[in-house]
Length: 373
Image (cartoon, rainbow, N blue to C red; front, side):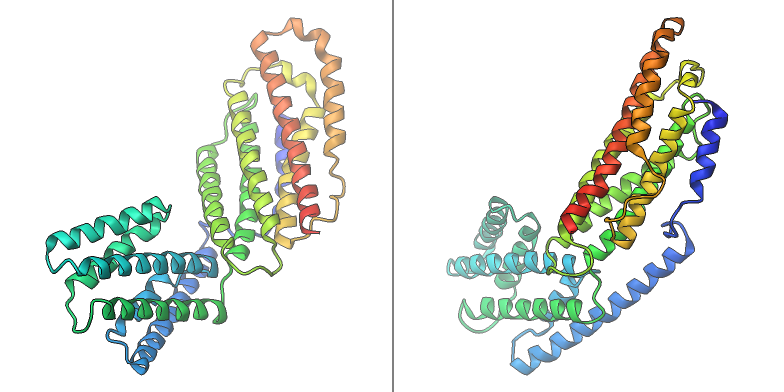
């Protein structure tokens, strides 16, 4: 790829970027501050409501309901459901073992045995996030002395925690709810835009000087993919419905992982390619394919942003670009003996990865459209 050609397609596609806010921009920080203020207000509302209801119901320690509500109420509905599930299971297991081991008497050994057994039970059941909560429940039941039978305090403890969970879920769902799947849709939009920018930065190093922001782009992409994976797990716990289907979001996340692997392979392929001359013979087909892949990343990001995948992109002919690239490779093959083998192998690897990226981008839109209807 000639340097001038590379610059042309890079500048051409910059105009196609969507108005998605970067995490480093002031607007995004303002949004985060508003979200934190809203979460604080909702948490205070849930805690106060729990305490009032506990006193109304005559529970021994109504503040435990407030504590549970504060712990489980998260920034979105999906993560609140996850935290509530872990909290409730850990409390039930801890309450059961705390009550059972309290019949062995008051002392350090029954207490330690109850903590070990309750946490091991959670681990054996695959409930890693519930194990510490089970240990906390055992501690409260066996070390904080109250009047009544060995089962009275565990029952009150479970009721208080259940009250906190129900109130937190109600507040999270009904009061200005934030859906994990909606945040994931925005996150996936950002992910595909960042991968498009990363793709452009990688090709800056093909027969030219590597892009200065390449390392930062890799970091941004990795962090965004990891955050989207966590949001996907939280979205699976949310009630169905809304403009973004879970199946479509899962599919786009998987396509993103595969595209990331291809970008990593492309980055390895263009390494040490600043003096290559064989690649220049692939112009203009190579530059056209690269430009359309860049546009493809942005187009898919736009589809996610609008949640519309049924409209084929105008003027974006990735399959035609692939066909033209194959024909060009066959045309220049007789002259390959005049160039170093390392350059030839590098060009074959680069064009192979470009074709795979083009096909995967095309499939991401078509397959997602089939999934979401």
